[in-house]
Length: 281
Image (cartoon, rainbow, N blue to C red):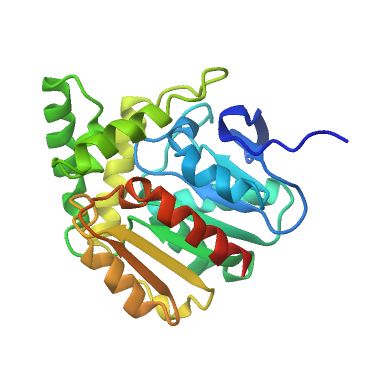
């Protein structure tokens, strides 16, 4: 009997070929049951998932994190629309042989998840949308400006841009930011390839397009949905989480106080059990 790996830092790096693309992914947790597929954020690779969120979920669920086309160690080129990214995610998931999944998504990942659910409702059982917003959402098209500004601020202080983008620059936010960035370094072996600048720029283009596109009919989403964010998200404004909650019938909404885009990471001790409970219900 092989031991079940439930620590993300030890999850083996795997690949699968589908549609002319080699997708890089990591897999952990007990197999069997409906897998939870993690959809990652802008500029992120497999190394950007907070182990304090993934590990508690992997203690009870089969978890899969992946690099979409053109990201990290996955081959091909990043598409310039969220819908095309959702098509790639669908190709990846079906290549692994799954016909039913739960989704855990953050930020850009949440946009891709929404596009996927609208197009393939039968594929998704439950949906977790964090730090994200709907197509046509107010100020989503300003994400690029905020991102470049914070990358510059971070470069000037030799810190990680996520410390500025994901957390408030106050007495609570700064230590939470440093702790989060440190947790992302816990995996030492077999790290992922960095995202390429062109891939990052194309993702920003896709987000801008999403922000300027016509709103989707989110009343089509009938899956149980958990929505979470901080109350001061500078990247994807917190009001958009409330907008999603209003438009997705029966969804649950959690807004954490005194926190930003990375509210779920700042409050991982509170949020992880809620996510586990939601997925297990």
